[in-house]
Length: 631
Image 1 (cartoon, helix red, strand yellow):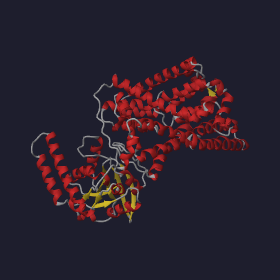
Image 2 (spheres, one colour):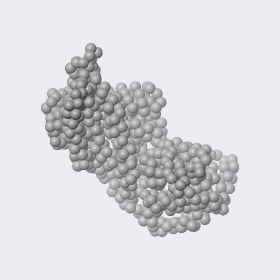
Image 3 (cartoon, one colour):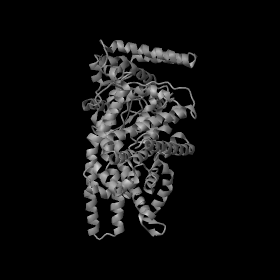
Image 4 (cartoon, helix red, strand yellow):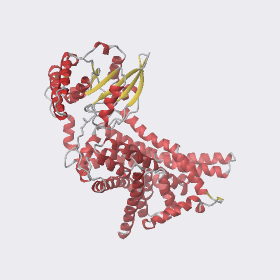
């Protein structure tokens, strides 16, 4: 028996991706703004011995093929042989959602209409007579609550039945299609035709609503009541900053850091002692013991220590995304973003940049104008991605143990502020253009689906683990070799290849206070991958060894400082180093993505050079002004 081909389509924020997750178990990001799903996503499942492939198409409001999302949907629906197309409709916003439904019916596409979010609709007093709804459109209708397995089983029952063969468009729909064909053949201008088509579609929607839907006495929704405070013009920005600050307290003080301290002790004390003793007793050569313990464990272990912080932060951001609050941030930030020539929608790729710069740069595809897209691509790397987080966390714990969360929070704010300032400069010089319109639907507030939140957290965090096992592992081996050898053979670390390269680089930072070859080597390695900054520090300053005497992050930091860090950094120069690390040249993976998305090597070179220059200047100001103020 052949595989059943099913496609899910619908407006953004209808719960379509949640249904996709429930049906297939696939790991699919659930977004709350149009354009999050750039390409179709495919998952597979089996039900009643029938293999089913499910395609999750991008959320779209129409199928006029004007935006990338609309084009993807129409191309796929018209050019692929499908057994079933499921139109996922938000029952609490049914009138608006039916506009897409009518357009799909005009194309002759047989639909299974999924009236999702029934719980929200009933809470608002909206009642839908599904039998009348089926009669009005001539298509089968299923009611669902996206996170309910019972609901998804109802969908699967329809998928595996022959119910679709029994349906054809109703007389009402057939009459509408004849009217649409007449409008398209009347010879009027495109604009006039579109206006007449919209009137015809809404006329059909009104008839369906009158026949099958009872709106009742719908007062302000729960989301509207919450938005009275959270999206308030006066309180919105302070509340947003307070929520963001709370996320950092959870990550760096209450939950993430205690787990990180435990992992640090397990890796850099227990496991390191075990491996050192085991390899020594086994008679392994000293150079190999050093490679494994001082190179691989010190390098990879220094990075793995921050895994709990990464996962806790991603969990918090995914949870906020699932509540619907992240979409509000676009509206909250719109006045600020407009001052730098972007719209509030431009904040979305920046927020994605807190996870990783690569998908954030790719996320700029969803922006409406070429100017907005290019500016977003070039400013996104200023954000504190997951790879920069270990640098900030390590230095904050080492030099500012009593205010670590506040210092890291300040770095995140610095990244956002610098991105906004640079966007203003780019918009006024290199990318002059008319302002863009800003249309964005606010999804209702709801309790996030924890399964989706956990899957999204894992999807974001696993990339960090994969890097630790591949790029960081390889980098740690390379760094160990470079720190123990020169072109004449084995040598002291001060005479090594790494020391020579680091010394060349350090000459640039005499005025910033961190002009040691170790700091230069760490900065140089960070261009390969920002995580290797911490790996390099772990190798060069013996982070793996010194933490054997430490009971928590602050103790580890203190011990590390006593073994060399104190001579390399002061609190002020450490802060300047954090600022530079926050702002300088993106990693090679991000640079490669910039080439792909911006369309040329010139933008790679521009991004690498201008960010390095900005980081150099800002870190210089921080250090020199700090000295003048007596820090």
